[in-house]
Image 1 (cartoon, each protein chain N blue to C red):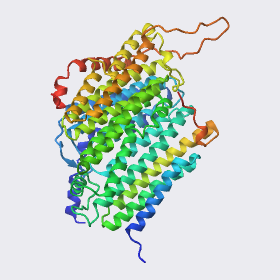
Image 2: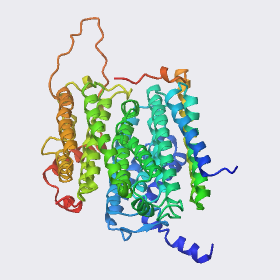
Image 3: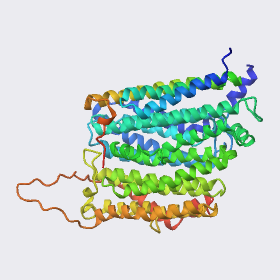
Image 4: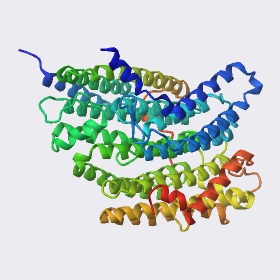
Length: 101
Length: 506
């Protein structure tokens, strides 16, 4: 049995869907953050699979940009989460609702 | 790879074409160097330096406005310089100057480092300027993420204030979610357009020109349709269109006021510049794009206006009213598919919106206290009596946002609606006009709070009166900014003249 483009896309689509559902359903900010990263990684898998299938290198190069951007996002995001935890002593979304009319 | 190929690639790297962006970036680095070099007591020159540097770049940009690279692609097709792109670059430079002036006023009250704010604002500005002329998905993604990550930091800038941090976190989660959607859309489009099984498949499938040709040849591909919808969703988050508007009210409230202004003016305009480019790329899927955008525009206008009706916090109010403005602008984008001058109308609308918003946010910065998130309509009581200047410009700004003739906001709405009428978007126009009528209620509630005496509960002896933040005296640079923006708002309403011709409106 050979593993073709469709199998990779299936995995990528599944990982993306799991990540998306996780962001909407989960209550812990760190878990939500992991789900967001899962979405990015799912896109990366699909990108590499397409790149290989189409025979163009653009996709592989784009992956490096995505990784760099994701690293920057994580650096800023974790800093915000840590700073918020120091003030509020919680990482549960339902307790972070001080902003209201 | 032969040397000739390398030489060709190097020849298209026209660094001079993006000189303004490079200068903005260098200025950002220069400010950081000054922070290290200068003694702490002299750090107050850094904001001045940022504003003067920006004004210098604006001057240079206006002098060299007629770029020789117009309608050309540079950097191997990563960028394409267009007339709209030139306008938006200038727009972002002006917006950044306004934000820096507001930043000097607002940061005075915070015990925070005062330098990084300006550096990050400048970096974000440079990325927005690149975003207005992207021609390739890699460029789009990197520039958009530079803007977004910069905004994460700016929104949570007052890190001693839990409200600012909470706003930053909400923006972070929603922003990363929308980047994920956008990225998956890009990947699908890349994969489909490069697939050898389709006609017109291309090896350079992230390039907008080639992608456009491909989509034109293959008008009903399912994967490409999903990709297009995902990419539009990612951009819709930036402009705060329904159903991606849920972050708006919380983030606008928690962010420091100058950052809220930058989000409302810069981030939204960047989203629309991008949307205009993308709509022309997705030309082959017109009916799908029009359907998606029409539903979004209608929901956006209704939601923004209805939700703003009950708000008492002015930052939430201006955020939600900004959502409805995004809805009117989306009507303009739909009209731009068939009516060419709608693009000029959108540019004029954005300009009027920027002027009016800078005025309103400028007044908000002066009325708010140490806690930036707590800005109630009641704090505006008797503003016109105690600070006649602030009261007067606030009246002009809010009137322009509400679209009262003869102010610039009215002309902007009129032009966009005329374009929509010509394009035959009657149901959308009906919703938009209903929205404008509704918006007058909350804008005038604000004006009423500032201009007319209000009943206040009597304060008995021994009771403490309800605390209100002390209003700030207006400094020179802020006074110049507010007066110029208010004056321009009034003048542009009467006379568009060369600007109108140049935007192709008359």
